[in-house]
Image 1: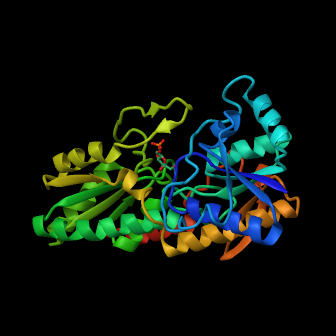
Image 2 (image 1 turned 180 degrees about the horizontal axis):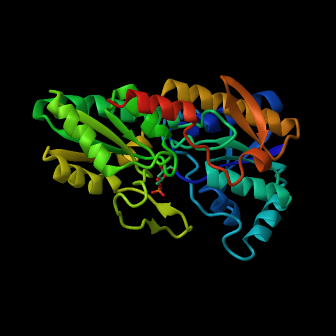
Length: 343
Ligand code: F6P
């Protein structure tokens, strides 16, 4: 079999571990040829690729980023691009692609499958918002980086009796905020799933400080939203792919809370630190299991499926039925725990 592999969308730790696992099984177990496309679909359209095997993937397991590069280009962006992808796929004799991607990339893979290009998905994103899987590659690493940051913020917040806000990524889902906030013992976690009231948040902080607590850590998901009519924030920018560009909420909220409470507030935006560097052991193992499962799915002819983590087991789901155009939000149980832990 000739299999193409590409990493698409925002990078995250663990992509190389997935590529390496696919390369090992492809060569050793199945005798496949594995072709890595550079910069995702852009590399297919421009015919930039390299052969991948055990030896070319040596040493990449702990490396962040992706040896293949990534882009947000899709075959649906420019007229004629889909035909180019079809033509390149046929000429190179590629049976199908393993697409390591987040929501957008896997929705695109589901559409490509309908259009006759075989695809199997591996979910990756620090946001953990891909539907149809409990975990996506990269999430565990981002949570551990954010948790460590909260631990560091605690000591400086206590020393100065300050309110410290930490903004974390996640787009319109609050998974990174919830997991790092709970693990780090944040006083308050603001997530997109539960619009917040700025006046109530300020009251909460003032109450804490009156009762003698000397540090308040507030974790702010970048996509958190004020409850309607409570506080106006400027509209988000839209990027060239039509996606909302998040980031900056905590910079607005910090001064507003300081103004309302009279307590000094400082803001830290964690940004791309969450996406960079070496993956945790969990993400390395998850990516490896997903890589193995993806090449097995290709040999089972289960095109159109995404490998998924479900209660610790690796299974497969249909991208068209369970992933395409969906976003997995923080569930009611976790929202309840966040609420109970706010103090
Ligand atoms: O999807 C992952 C993510 O890191 C989001 O949490 C964040 O909003 C976005 O990517 C920013 O990515 P970029 O600046 O690369 O578009």
